[in-house]
Structures are given as structure tokens and as C-alpha cells.
Length: 86
Image (cartoon, rainbow, N blue to C red; front, side, top):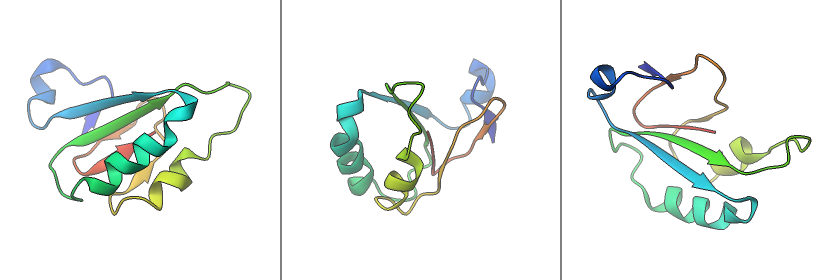
């Protein structure tokens, strides 16, 4: 497990994949996660452009698309392989 702000040395243990999307990128995110195997050895961090006043349902929506655990990232969250963080 590594913090979202992992150093280059600790991040070498497993790759962390950053995925950015606009508010209209939901379908693309779903397709990507649907076609990824649940055990890639990678940690995924999804960042979606969204109005800050709008409550995101992305964790719930993406959880229905993949067998990997999908979690809300918070300050100090640890990234684990085969997990998706929003």
C-alpha cells in the first residue's frame, strides 16, 4: 500500500495509473474498467472534472462495472494494487 503522494522509490513496487475524464467521460471509464481483468497488479486513480457543488456518484456507478474494489480517495488514502480510487 502506498499513499496517493507516493515517492518514486515506493511507487516502483507497483505502478499507479492515473485516469482523467471530463464529466462526459463516464461511458469511457465504464468501458475501460469493464475490460480490465480484476487482478492487474496496478492501482488506479480516477479524477473526473465535476462541479464541486455536485455530489459524485462515481464510486457507486463504477463499482457496478468492475470486480475491483472502488473507493472514494481522501487525503492520506493508501493506494493498493487491484483497487480503483475516485
